Structure formats: C-alpha cells, structure tokens
Image (cartoon, rainbow, N blue to C red; front, side, top):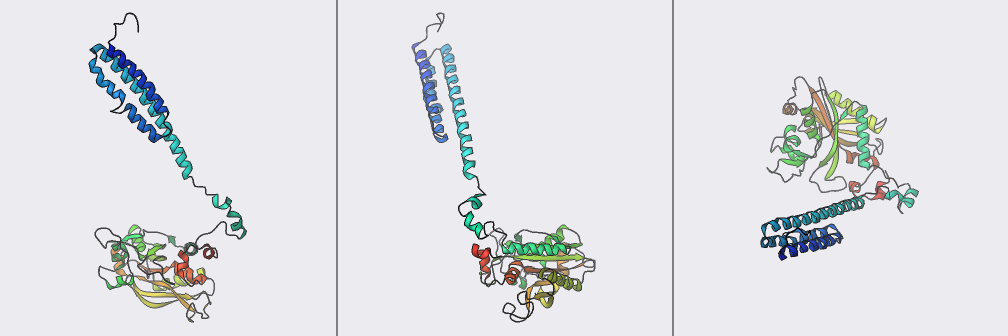
Length: 367
Ligand code: DAH
C-alpha cells in the first residue's frame, strides 16, 4: 500500500487478508488430491456456492462502493486462479486415468502362445487351433459352387414374415408353415419378425435386388424351435442355391446337383432326385447323394441303402416370381437348399451333433 492511498477500512483489510489465506489454503488442498473424485470434492468445497470464497462475497456489502469494486476484483482474481489450477489438475488426472484404462483393457493376443500353456499345447500340435468343422465345410461348399460359376450372397438372420414365408408362396395360415417350428422376436405387431427358419428368404432378397440372370449360393445361420438331439440343433446352418435365367429346365437342376456332388464328394459319387413337396418350388424334389461313409455299399449311416438325403430342391414356383416382380413367362429357375451341419456330421461320421457346440478342444482338434 502506498502512502497516497486512502486509509482502508478495517473490513476491507480483513476481507483482503481472508482472500489471500483462502487462496493459499485452497491451492494446497487442491494439490493434495490423490485422484479425480477427491479433487472434484475439494473443488466444490473451495469454489462452490457454499465455499468460504462465496461467503466473502456476501461481506462485500459492508464496504464503501470504491473498496467494494476493488475487493470484489481481488476475490474474482483469486477464484480464477483457483479454478484454473483445479482444471489443470483435473485434466491431468483424466489423461492419467484414460492411460491406465487403456493399459488395463489391452488384449495381449500373444498370451496363449507365449504363456505357460504354449509349450505342452505346441508339443501335441494344438497350439494354434483352426476353423470349426462347420465353418470349414461351409467354406469348402462355397469354393465348390464358386468354381461352378455361382456367386455367394448373404441375408439377415432376423427376418420378416414376408421374406421367410409369404413371398415364398406361404400366405398367412398356409399349412406348410408348420414344416418349420418358428422362433418369433418380441416386436410389434406380434408375429411379424422372426429368426429365419431357412436360408430361402435370401432368394427373395436377391431377386428383389438384382435382375436375372442369377446364379448364386447363400450360406448362413438358421433357427428353429427344436429341442437339440443327435440330429437336430436349434441353431444350425444351411446353404441355399438359386438360378434364374431364360430357358432353365429341370434337367439343368438335376445336372447341377450331379456336378456339385461329384465335385464336392469326389469321383464316383452321384446324386438322385425323388418327388417331394415345398411351397416355393413346383415340381419339388428331395435330393440324395451316394453315402460318403460306405461309398454306396450300404452301412449304418445310410441304413443300408447306399444313399443319404441331403436337401430339397425344385423349379421356382411362378407365385414366387410374381412376389418379386419377375416375369415367369420370360424367366424360369431352380432352387435348392440343405443343412451344412448335417452334411458335416455325415462327412466325419459324428454320432451326435451337439458335440459341435460343446467347445471341447479334444473333440474339435480332430478335424
Ligand atoms: N428351405 C427348405 C428347408 O429349409 C429347403 C429347400 C427346399 C430349399 C427346396 C430350396 C428348395 O431352395 O427349392 O427345408
């Protein structure tokens, strides 16, 4: 204070001194915070509505107006310094916490190979693992069809009633809907969205989105309300096939199935068709292939017949073409579909399909 300054009032001096001590005390308290949450509490104490600093403001009224402005500025400057120190400390805690969170969440993907288990697992050749049997089978199927000129397409697992049933020539209450035990999703209105019971709805999506000619296979996961047993899983896989072009005949269907069978299962393996019914094809057939276990000689797997049933097929029903706006006078086509898990089961002679879901390494490592 200079000699020229007017003498200050006792209130001014005591408030100004209080500001100094509150600031240095507040700074010390902020600096002492060990972590962000504590810092926030101290910040509230030191700078909040009920802080000592805030209470000083209410004492300003006791001062003459020129002193009030000056001391008000002192309080505000102290508050600003405290606030910016609090902000800086908070920012440093936040970046520290972010760093340690990232560190904690880091996935050490080398752990399995370099950990204590690696040596014994490597020694028996199981260190690295491989694709699941079903995935391997699906990939082999895709490769076989791609080599025959087919494209690969996919569709959603949650479907509407329209794609799973109606567009496939099954209007509401059509009795053939009973061929599939359906899991519905709890969405409004009830009964409109479901988990697809087969891959056939992808045919509809494909024909809606592209013009003929279409030559495509559509693999994917399907769901049915089935109790798991040796030959059924409620979650399983199918692969669908669809050909739409000018002049496609039943002969093309039979020839395609035969070419696939020989290409996938090997020379000497054949196919045959027997009449059947599906709402989306007319005529419809079931197709069978030479039993891959006994090569047709007859065994337990094929019940001595030398054949095993693989899936369904047929000529695309004109009502299906109508549902997607394809002119059935100009175009014709065939479709087929079969279970991938079932095929894998036959190929490796698996007595119980449920083993595919058990995740027992001793089982999985065999394939
Ligand atoms: N979608 C049938 C099923 O799940 C299989 C099937 C049969 C697909 C005939 C077809 C077909 O494309 O033409 O049992």
